[in-house]
Length: 200
Image (cartoon, rainbow, N blue to C red):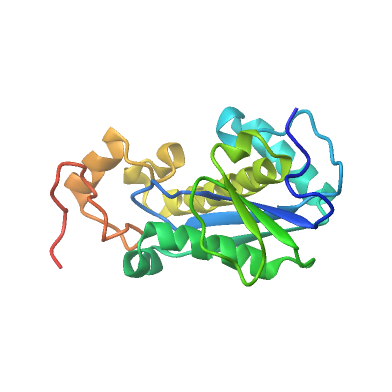
């Protein structure tokens, strides 16, 4: 059973991102505030759940949460500020949209850029330890998957409906065969062989 909170007696938002390691597409992040002492035995790190369970849980999270929001940073922005800063920005954008202002933030991972004046704690593998971070991981993952599935219809040769923009062998081969799309992150080593697939 995941823990309901990290901070005592504070309105706490859990944050997580999806798509940080992808070659293509925006990075998504979610922020979720759950009720105090919330319980959900099914909620876990989104990577440990099937797609069917993630989408079912998304409905439960959105119904049960006191507040939730999703933030997005585009490939163009990622190329300008780098993916680490883009991940932080996506989380900040999610926090900005919450209908309830949090009093503290807990974040999956080991790095975060302070949000306003709020206390925060980074938690390695936090999406498998705290319910609000797990909930954020589910929302970020499912909303990003929806986005990548829509892009896959426009660019079917890259197999985004299966790889969601991650650097699979088929995805890299498609870059070799077809070049890059407007959705690829141009600051990345897109082929994974030390060579970029385009000229600046």
